[in-house]
Image (cartoon, rainbow, N blue to C red; front, side):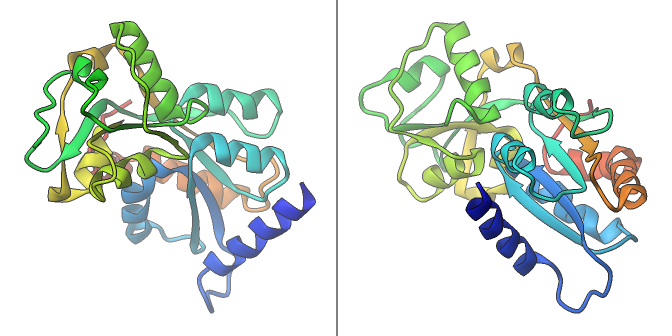
Length: 240
């Protein structure tokens, strides 16, 4: 564990802005939040932000193993609850919602029209791993619809699923609507009615061990503000 933490700390140090003077505010955020959180940097007037993006489950493990962080934003409530139960965070707040879609190549050459199509033998489908919120949400949706499939791979984050489709290494993958929007014209979304039954919600909290508590709470306030709302909606998220 010490070796993994030491490596992580080195990587985190490399990500800090050079010559910034002030210690960076360390924001751990679900990979799907990359676009809106980067957009919020322009409206932020506190210390420089150091954004650590990964699957929510990965970030939670890092924090539980002792990785220093000031704020964490997860793509689901159960992952945040693990940190609440371990007394690592202050009271979490829900700040956004999302929805699942099927990402396919632009033009939809394989003619994927519904969730059940993902079980076709001629399709290469990828999902996020089950411990990742996007993977858990996808399985919930598939199980609820009675769709059984054998994914080509189980990826470490929802962005990794999207990249497989973008690169042509998969015909389809279940991702968030915001992910497809961030990819531009490289992929397109197939909307599925079954997604309405899956509550994809995002939660944010300040770490109890943060040495920058006031700045961390200011960042959470920014995310919850009209400015944060607008950045999230522009990126394809919905209000909480």
